[in-house]
Length: 167
Image (cartoon, rainbow, N blue to C red; front, side, top):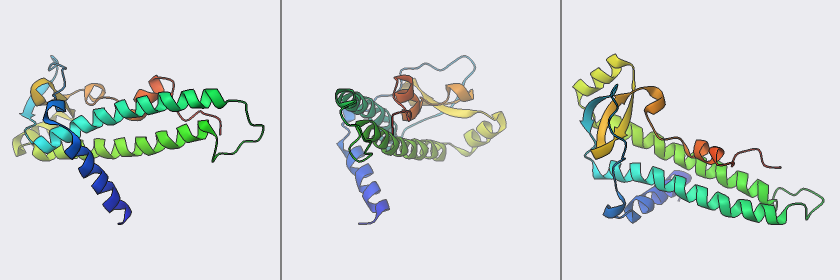
């Protein structure tokens, strides 16, 4: 199976594993400067949106575990070997998870935009804003900084994880 095929199988397996009870709309209410332009109805896109959050949660948990392993092994070797360095392993994991998350993120927002009516697409274009998802799966035009939850890299960086590990 080629790389794209492997990724698509992984994506299919991940979305199929999401239970209906795990698919929940964001809790954030529509802001006073936001305009509702539709509702996200597609159950597959709702799962994809949910997967974005699940990936961030998994990445944070895995990073914490690997960070503890890196701290436990810090200073035990005099020569650096990136194939066995716990800090380098953290960086590789973060990079791989970050790429997957960014890909899912792009797919999700492309799908949401594809669900918009022609009138909503025109309204979005005319407003020059970006889209976001709010409670009850409402699609809104919003200010750019309020559009999407932070990326996995932004989340992990805010918790002290990043690309600055020894290596």
